[in-house]
Length: 284
Ligand SMILES: Cc1cc2nc3c(=O)[nH]c(=O)nc-3n(C[C@H](O)[C@H](O)[C@H](O)COP(=O)(O)OP(=O)(O)OC[C@H]3O[C@@H](n4cnc5c(N)ncnc54)[C@H](O)[C@@H]3O)c2cc1C
Ligand SMILES: NC(=O)c1ccc[n+]([C@@H]2O[C@H](COP(=O)([O-])OP(=O)(O)OC[C@H]3O[C@@H](n4cnc5c(N)ncnc54)[C@H](OP(=O)(O)O)[C@@H]3O)[C@@H](O)[C@H]2O)c1
Image (tube, rainbow, N blue to C red; front, top):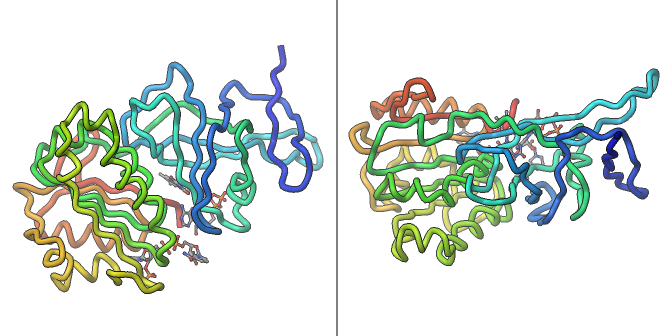
């Protein structure tokens, strides 16, 4: 039997095209700014993943003008929900002329997306050696894998303290992360598993670079000057106690990676757990 998948269309009603077995249904969409939105969708019953991993998601592409054939248009996306959630959540950019997100930004509840259920990635607990403090360093949508890990009970079981830094250009780009961290305070599962003091382990350090906010500047500069450590009331990173995950734009990843190496931290991987791990938030 041939299934059908509907392709969202920005101007007219949905158009039916041949379906793939990997279609999932959108269950919630939230827009934060004209460049950022999040959405939730159904999760394949058999899909297992480790909090922090990414998958390929997308929509059917436009028909080839010569052959009429349609192919899936897929991109890597960090899963923003934790592995125990019965649905999947994603936090997305809207690139105005981006092949996928110029259309994905128009999805509605009930629409279908394609999801390849083969999660991979390095921003996972397995890639880090045991430690006391865990740092999450994000720019922009690089917050997505940390939205997963922050809702993962293991994070609170494995570490005494979590420090989350998020650098964005504008204040509105911090809303998703801010709301998520506020929501942890009333998260029933985390309260049940860890106890009601778990969220007190969290230090959140949002900064902006191009719009005024209470704390301005790139996290790298704020660490270099010592301001970030002074503001947070914590010591500088030390390989004996600190573990870190980095997810941002390429320049940020490279700069922060070099800084962590200067503190003596060593990069880890699934096959070789060490002090920190890094993943690109998007391809430049
Ligand atoms: C491992 C990995 C995980 C990713 N996870 C996410 C995620 O959770 N959320 C998400 O929105 N994107 C994520 N991306 C980026 C995503 O794969 C797409 O690039 C993005 O959805 C845009 O797709 P597009 O086809 O519209 O444009 P593309 O042709 O893919 O990108 C066009 C240009 O837009 C810029 N761009 C792309 N993605 C971003 C972004 N996220 N933030 C800022 N600028 C960007 C880049 O300059 C890029 O060259 C991830 C990428 C990788 C490699
Ligand atoms: N965000 C917007 O409002 C906006 C609007 C229109 C178009 N765009 C385009 O969209 C793309 C992505 O924009 P984005 O804002 O999502 O992501 P981005 O360019 O990756 O910037 C996200 C944050 O990372 C900071 N950053 C960049 N390099 C860094 C480094 N080496 N060390 C520490 N911090 C660093 C930026 O600070 P700085 O501000 O100091 O660079 C910014 O605060 C860009 O190509 C941009 O031209 C963005």
